[in-house]
Length: 293
Ligand code: PAF
Image 1 (spheres, rainbow, N blue to C red):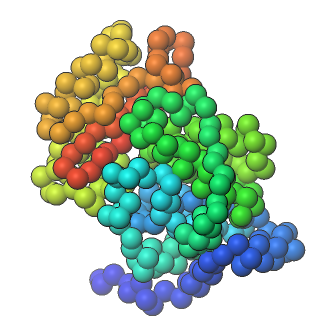
Image 2 (cartoon, protein in one colour):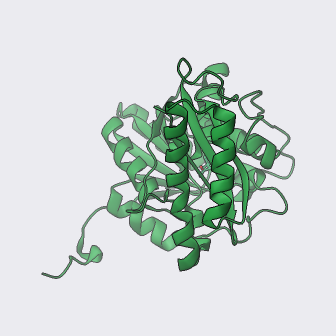
């Protein structure tokens, strides 16, 4: 049997919204019809992980809007902003097939007019881990996500647990700033070998992909060691050495952290724990994390 041609599927193409007035008009129309809206913020280069967020969002709200905006303020000057994969056509096709109702695709000027002067900074939770390796990154994420929330005024928003520190920071921002949006965090989607799906996996060669698949195994081994009595700092050191032995070029961090504050985990028997890692391999910087229990 031949697979159905996606072009034969008569799903409606999502509405493309490009600026704030059009977004407001869309939101008002939904409100008038007493329809709820879910937002799935993305930077495009969509994979099954993003589509799983859309699928979950469709179960929680009447309408689902996916934002696609490669946010320059969350990239440091030496990072991969210019090289970041941009796949607009296939993103639109995937979102049509997934049943999204709208795509918000603002320009740089819509998000950051030349005289833009605001920054949202969330203290503490953003300091360790990614905060050490990517100074300013979380200010860029918090600012753009706050803008998206205020522009879209969605009832809820969906994020992946793969960017775990980002998710926890967004939860904290929403509480501290009394934002009326419910945050849902969804489990990381993985390939059959445990590699977390990521737009940045596009940078990996076949040989690098084989190495990349070891990362999740290292994290599980660290969790196993801690559960069987190894001190968190010793387990982290083991993970660091093991990642290099597996063939990663460098380890930015491998950490056992408190699952809510992301401070170093000290008492695994009584605190919720999360094992998080960022490693470098060729052109890619890969992050992953798992729950300790
Ligand atoms: O996770 C991402 O893709 C981005 O950090 C986000 C949340 C869309 C903000 O640009």
